[in-house]
Amino acid sequence: MAFDQNTIRWPGSGSAVDITTVPFGFYLNETPSKSIPGVFEYDCEKSAAWAAKRLGYPSINIEMRDISFYTCFEESVSEYGAQVNQFNIRNNMLTLRGLSTKDYPNLTGKNVSGTGLPFIVNIAKQYGSEIDVGGSVPLKRVSIQLIKGQQTYNLNELIACEKECGNRIEVRRVFHGPAPAMARIYDPFSMTGMSYSNVLNEMGFAGYSPATQFLMTPIFEDLLRGQAIDFNDTVRKSGYSFEITNNNLRIFPIPTYDQHIYVEYIVEKDKLASGIGTNANYDVVSDYSNVPYQNVVYNKLNDVGKQWIRKYYLALCKEVLGAIRQKYSTVPIPGGEVTLDGAELRNEAKEEKEVLVTQLRENLEATTKTALMEAQATEAEKIQDTLRKVPLLIYIGSLMVSFIFTEYYV
Image 1 (spheres, one colour):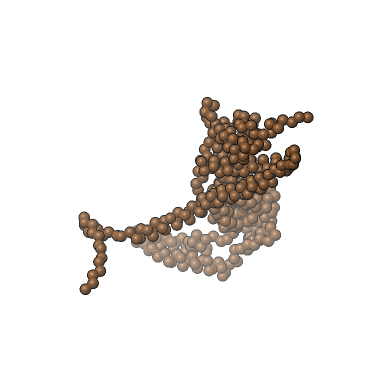
Image 2: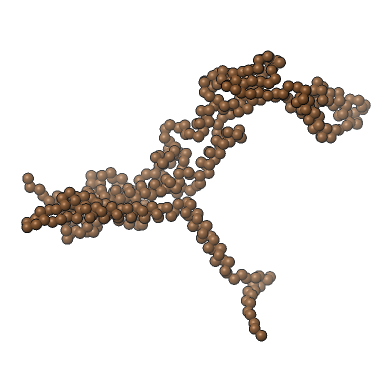
């Protein structure tokens, strides 16, 4: 069967760049009007002719067709965009975490300015929940009925099962204690307080007629009375306390009448949910995998990026051509054979790709937020050093006098 070698060789020009000749077509039709030729389409076609000439055409045959050249060009653009997007994701992750992907479906080309403060605040909320000073974990309160003569109460039955459907809880506070001393200063039965009659006498409502004179006691007297009540409760009465062991709440002293106490608690699953996103629809940025960076817009790339793409594109073309030529390392000819350079082309392409990627990453790392702030601080410091060497002028009234000191020798 005869084989037409011209079908596998670069003919000197390529066909139209469209969805039939480019594998994915990511960057096609970026221009707003069909009457305006696309930048990607134009560059892709011209770059194919350029790469073929860089590989030796027309002095030697290039065993690649236009679709192979177009494929390498599209891959080069995608590789450039992937490297830039990877850098942006790392550089902006703290700022973007928790961002709604519905509201911001594509961040490519967007200026992301901000700090990791929202992320830090979320962490602070979790610490605040642990020490009961706010936070994102709801603090719940429930009333427990104390029964006369009963000292132990099962919190698992009274709260976890009855109120929280079997979910584990953490008790944060139990409101169980005597009434405040200041509320009992004027209680006639508190032993150390003042009776109501004494209060009326002091305020001029009894014992004096007419009520034009009264006695106002200093504030330290109320404080001393309150302290006396506290000491009386501590020394002469049973102390109010409680302990929680194995889900059982023990009340001290044993209740002598039916009453209510309040218990504040949180549900363990609510605490876990405060640190783990509960939205299962993948509509917020959670990690590296769902940050909404899409393909770059080729029409918006600057010349620096396009030059990197062209160099990487040429390396890919060498790699493809090397693979084709390495399949048949030698070609028999009358009176001998020809050795092809497939292996050399592939090795050369590998080295060029590694150098280009390393160079691009170094340039990107030089523009991280930390690197830019360090450069700005260094620049400010150098400016200050320069300003210190500028001669200072002394202003006297409306005159400006510059002093020049000259050393005289006698």
